[in-house]
Length: 229
Ligand code: MN
Image (cartoon, rainbow, N blue to C red):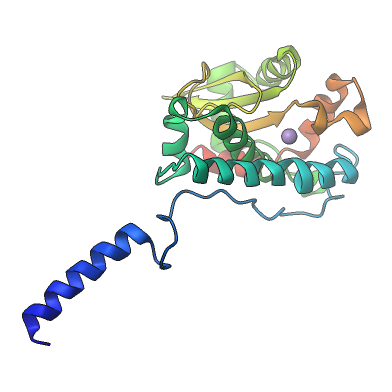
């Protein structure tokens, strides 16, 4: 073929590839959620969080959220380029997309903000300065966060978020998160606590207060500090 025909065909092929995706006949490559690999063994957070709870929580609950949000993304032909874009548009999508998208994202965030207590990470440096600056002291922050976790009625999450130069605590219902357009609590998430009964019921039954108290022992403060930017 001459050069002009070659160029024309290349342009057509490029246009087709962009629409069809890299695999012939596959839908346009869209957002897809996946589970982060756990950065510790399932019994590594004992005794604060027991191995069976970790196993069911990660392998069953979280896995289901990931599968279901990806199904919703396909069914609803959602084409957001990133998770952040997806959450900022969440008011346009179904309850299936919202609940499972939140479930997929929130749990990835949650696993990474935990570490074995022996790792001995304690808040220090810039994250401690930010907490002191916004709450007065670490103890006052802990009190407010615990209260947010304890007063969330039913299922949901407690959060530490950064908004502007301030840190604040709050909670969200169900699997909502502070990145969602529909959330009352807004900001950049720094730390999250799952207060769904599935997160603690096997070990703590109705005693959410004991779960929350012991959870502080396995917070990965290095990770929280890194999210401060
Ligand atoms: Mn959960």
